[in-house]
Length: 428
Length: 105
Image (tube, rainbow over all chains, first blue to last red; front, side, top):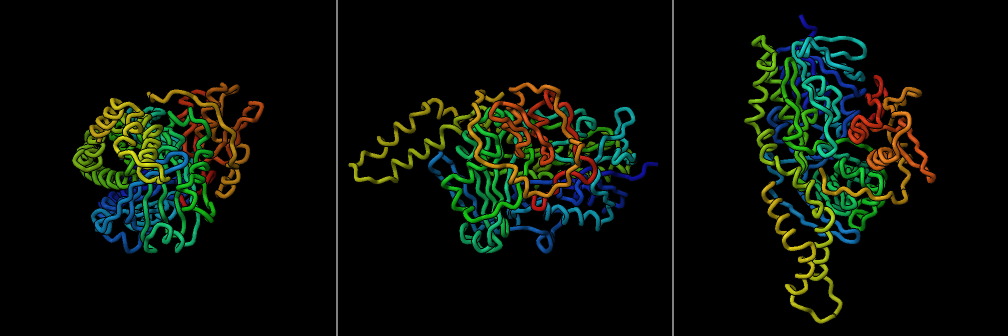
């Protein structure tokens, strides 16, 4: 007889939802979280698309600690001395089905964990799982703080830097091209100042992504999210590329903060936290097996993340996967078979859901970003130079716009430009 | 493999990353570092960690000598991925209740 029906490792976005589903189905569940409180070790950009959360907790808007609803999207291509931006605002961003909110994980994650606790899950905080207990190929529990705790099924939700996924399902450590380093500062400003600078109401805000000079031309980008009285500002750079950069990533962030497009937005703000986190960027082809004997993987421990440059998603995938993992584990427990075959319903359910379908659809995208350095090094300055031809007026007699712009557009080579557009369109 | 392969020499660093780390909350496990490097880290591999670590735990002096201090670790695991089993000899999470404690995240 095992100590618990199920043990969930990690209480970020996937873990508590899996625990909630298991406890709601009447199973005994233990959640082991290494942070002294849930969220203490967690970082995200962070914007949460709430569609999957709403399916599990339809009333989340009444008490979830959300920062601001995103009603404005902006994407900027940065040259060192200029920025070319696209902005999108839409009444439809206020529709519940497509809503997204900025969140701070040290506030959001305790709330999500409280839902699992209210449903009956037990929590241990402040202790990391050192290793999994195994009987042959079967996972039979965890060793945490020197204690051995057994369970019929273990749900691994310990994040992108999982030290346990290898032991669970033989997943090797991610390669340098499959993950990016994320660095972020939380910058405090009065709520009204943020609302004014982003032209938003006090409970609404913006999501803003950057490419080009933000990362000194390296593969990746910058981000800026408005919280209630803070701004989350940071960079994400592919690990394989940051190791060759001309400055350390923290200097890159400092340079980004001083960029003429960014500096006025954070002017007068006070940095209150400096954080770092890995981001899974390898897509479907970097994912480990999701199921083993007695074990399931959900969230970023299974590399569930979609970064398209204009949207970045991880938390909504983790919440959906956590829910499916919890439900599939409950079904397997009820049938008395928690072998890989008994747990296979999880993979089927995820395969039918947006999680694996989206990862399939966008399978080619990580390769496109990685093999198209012009996206980060050439096109932002090209965009600037086209804009210069259009907008700078110094009294010199005009030449027709097509003649003025042609040499600029021709610069990277028309064949290259055509290829990159074609590759990008196909990858999406 | 990335097509951007050139390693660029480091430009001067103007920011004091340690001052930023000082804003974070930590329980430091004195004398019990959770990351261990090999005895004599290769200069090129060390240079990669200097560039990639968001906490700036890996530093080079003007004369090229190497410095590490794991007290300000953000526990992201980037160095573990960069080293790929090379110059990072062992990488664990800090002991129970220790390490960074994010107040915002």
